[in-house]
Length: 183
Image 1 (tube, helix red, strand yellow):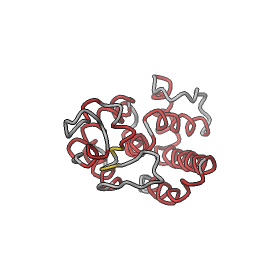
Image 2 (cartoon, rainbow, N blue to C red; image 1 turned 135 degrees about the vertical axis):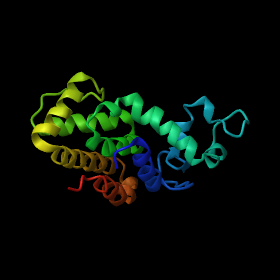
Image 3 (tube, rainbow, N blue to C red; image 1 turned 90 degrees about the horizontal axis):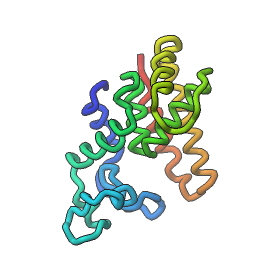
């Protein structure tokens, strides 16, 4: 799984078709495009009625989801500049929890591995350099394992703060682990 399109195939598979779970803070969602996210995008008035609502989400197709993901969750957070083996995990997390969260998780993982980084969610030259250095010297597999560990901690913090989200914890954890690098 090393091209953006291949990663997207997996992400779309995880996200699935239309759901409107009353406990999902993102609201109505299709292929992972949530109403909460869509409300910030004028181009998401897909039915042309002047607002962005559940009906627009129902009209999202895979092509649109893929375009939005690449633009808003991959390239805009510089994930394309990171080691290729880390990109699937981070791209999936970016879609699942936001791009800044994905970068913060990477930074936290690198910090746990001994790199001196500010955990600020901005993927600059220090973060990119540390990711390459760690992947080379510690191994991308180990870096990715630490990202999964930090990702699961993040999900547990969500559940601790919002117990209604506990119903999603096993799925979130399984999803994170599905991106572990198999050698």
